[in-house]
Amino acid sequence: MRLPAIIVLVIFIAAGVVLGALNADMVGYDLAFFRVQLPKGAALLVALVVGWLLGGITAWLGVSSSRRQRLRAGKKPPVKP
Image 1 (cartoon, one colour):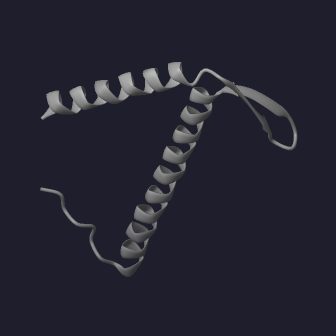
Image 2 (spheres, rainbow, N blue to C red; image 1 turned 30 degrees about the horizontal axis):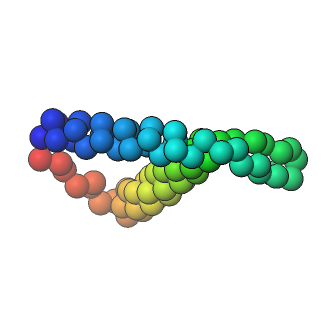
Image 3 (tube, rainbow, N blue to C red; image 1 turned 30 degrees about the vertical axis):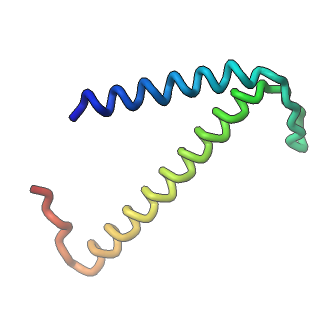
């Protein structure tokens, strides 16, 4: 099962490298406090990482809040096999 996951990961990394190389144009961003000049590929990567982090934090908060509610109610958490 690990080999197919590694192959898919390598394919996505290669696609990301190609996408970044093809989008080398500089793009300017005005973030109110300062201005940033980034290549399009780097801007896309930053947006991807920020979205991934925000999604992970949101999922973690949802799981931890439901676990906390179960503990307050006195129920045991489900046992993993």
